[in-house]
Image (spheres, helix red, strand yellow):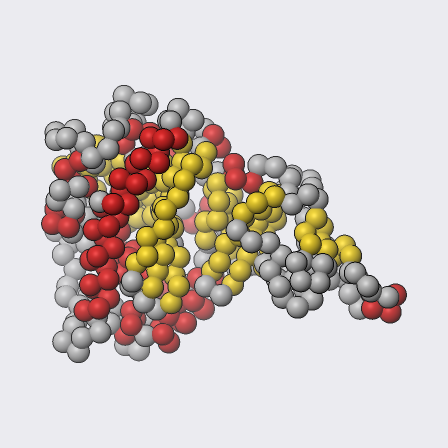
Length: 365
């Protein structure tokens, strides 16, 4: 695999190679923070949420003392998953395979059919933990138990989010949609982290009925990229938002956090998190999870989700697949970054910063 220049994007080998994807899994996904839920989705003792990080299955559960715990979703007997999706258990975790039973803090509680001699070597067995942290009322996990705390690497995002939603705990999940991106995860994230394509790809949707390109900025900040702008009010609105809904209801902000999540504040008081779920070297799930701040009707949130899915979301789905396909051509080579004024809507400064983080993670020069 070639190196990555500071002046040009990575070459195609980083996007079309299964070997490169395995390196991304080992050095990036297995060592970084992944958003799994909002705290409201784990409000009661026994509530749990599962999350897959490629072939690593994990879950978060609120234990009997009210603490959040994160574990690998593997029974310590034969590895069968203990839970699926999201839901609630009453006081204990029971493996669906051989009914090994665990406390919500991960300690093994019971083994059906075990004799005294069977129990001698298993008294200290517990579920294997994963690192867990709550940041800005969202629950993150990290497979690396020695990872640097997320809050120590981010600066100011929680404060900015609170300027939109003063009580972040009050956000409530309403609905979600998943868009299949037939491309490497990096292509999808690069597409998100620039609006250079917006006037062409989204000329009849995003830039005419949601966001104004005037004053729109993309600003790299450490392991994050901040997108900030204003609601589009000059033409017919793409969806029904009220800029007087709250103090910042006329603004847009998206706070992308390395490597696979963005926290997005939409005009009108809507909120969504965008999650990228890498599947393999050429397939990614682009998941939108939509929330209400408590003052928005659920139907309005669902209508926005569907509107986005069939307009801007559908447009991005097409272009990222075409880019992935193009990278398989022997004639493909990446062109230079268009930086422009450095942070405006037609600048690729966000993409350049993303590639810088990628170089650091893979120790490329």
